[in-house]
Length: 169
Image (tube, rainbow, N blue to C red; front, side, top):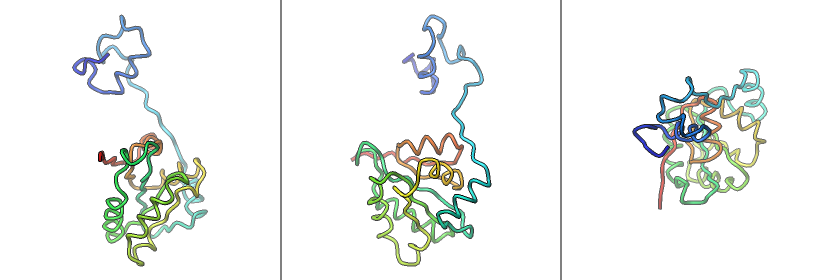
């Protein structure tokens, strides 16, 4: 199962662990197609939840998930998120920050780096949403920029385009 030539994708190696190793010799032995986690959100849910949080329909949303459970080693620095937010807002997007209450301060640091006009198009919802609301709002985003976190997996299951910067101090 550790042979990367026989099992080129990490997900294939993990799936193969569920089977008898005498049966599974290569990735081609896995049942096809592989099932991927998928979440579905209706347009009505997106519209209702965006309105609930007073998010504008004037600009497309880009979601940022700046938190990570295991601390700074897994977090892209807030000042990089802030620079990206500035560029995206200046290009006509709105930025929505997601995460738990523990991530709220990181969101505030991103907001503080923006000028007043840019701050009007950036919302810090870290710690302000229930999980189901965050899922719906992530589904409404055009793309997600996220650290390696649970919300990254939510975005993937929603089939949102995502970028996960790899960071190490």
